Length: 229
Image (cartoon, rainbow, N blue to C red):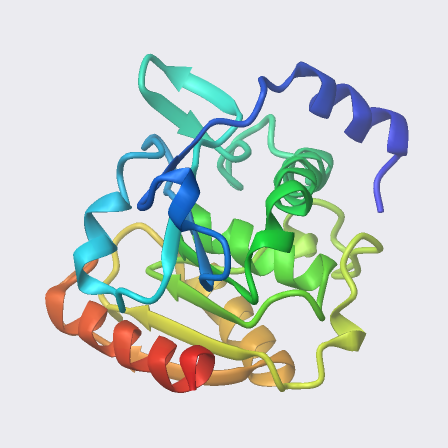
């Protein structure tokens, strides 16, 4: 884990969490929750268009990332290849999301994470930090954070990977020709998912760095089988 004071400074600089919901407040209690985590440069509205493609039993909530890139464009942390990337920002944003989740999770029998691109990096980090708190994870055209990208050692005290015993259902959809997620990120993620989660991996030819209708059909089937059942 990085120095606590550094993580705290990042969190203190973040705004109050802002999210949009698929149901009005009075209709959410008792429904299984899917938390949507958008990609780099997007915002909380970006993934809400997926709502009609997912089982109606779920309530969806999409959280805005806390770091501003431009009006209407946000990031969870700097790009891994950027000069200002550091694991402290990943940890700070993870804690920011988890504190927000702690305030709402009691209304829901389960919480599932669905992240696209950098949002998948966020979803995997949340799972790695709290291995026993999520019913399932869906990762679309994304990756898991490799700590060696910063510290070179490959170890990361913040996460609890050794507590992930391969039982959490995890859907990973991607195109092998994705032009955004670099081969080193794919290789690390593939090794990580094989060792730590109950993996369903599907390759979608021709979608590049995007989400397709057939993919969402598979995600809906996955959620019915692994969460609702």
